Image (cartoon, rainbow, N blue to C red; front, side):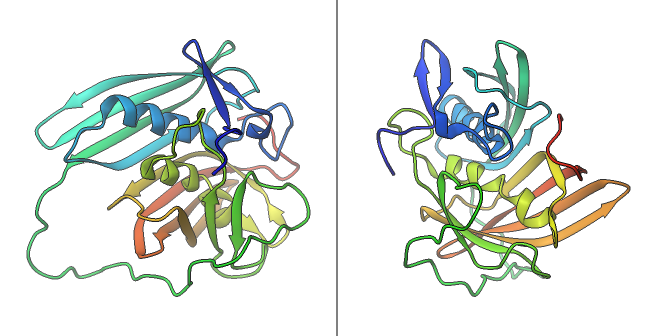
Length: 259
């Protein structure tokens, strides 16, 4: 990762977006995936503890974020013996733009006996060359598309962060997973003629943190009715599956509108 081109610079408690923090839909809008990353970063910095694992992160993206400084506030909701729950609120000078909730669970010895169902590792080898750049928007992260957009069947991709999220901080495994999870929406909700749904949220669940900087995403479900969709993906690192992500989305046939 580059140490000089972070997506955000921290100045006096605010996170100021860099030009490449823009998303593909508008030059005046921060990419939604970065808001989930900022929420995960703040929750991890303020509420992590050895022996507690970030098992779930839900990110609500209910308002488009302009290219303005962002503040992230967190609050401890519950601190029990085996569970910790914390919330995050993301704001700009124009008001609240998103929120997140995390569940941390106490790690322990796994129970004895085999499971009736275990998600298998996928059959995609880790990428060993540079990602291919296609036409249109150039993502500010490395992306290896294993299936073509609009092709029937489950979509698959490998991705890797190219820039720090904030200043020169290393991207932690939890933040890396949170950033990658937003890709669940285009991968699971894509149609044969493009992306016609805009996601309102995503919920990432992790059995373990990723051990590699490259993460694989495989679309494993999509349903829609009356203009409302839900999508589901499985996340992998280079050693196997690590968790799932589900998104909800609303039909957006003529281009991105407001949430």
